[in-house]
Length: 129
Image: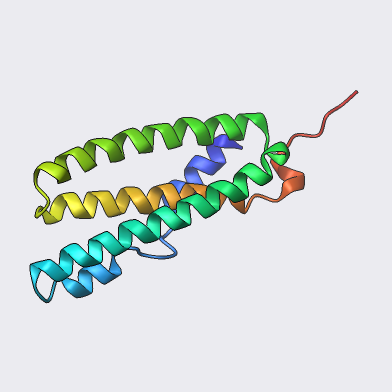
């Protein structure tokens, strides 16, 4: 199941693009780009917190292997995001770093949404006695 989850995450198109406002703003002035980026970051944080709360509420229904896979991958993604954030703090005007940060947001939200959408009955292996 963890391998299928990884494959799905890699192949799944982005459902929502938190960077679309930035693409629109990039046609205007730089301060609009930074404001749109800040708004995208706030949207990401709200979405992430809501998805994490949903997953926590149903954590007992997840297969332990899937839960480990998700936790491990979120840690890797969070570590990468911290590195991108540090580079972005050093050079806030870099559009490539902003794109990388938005891509990291999308991937983390995609992973959380995929896990959230796993049906409860198939998320945990049936126990045999």
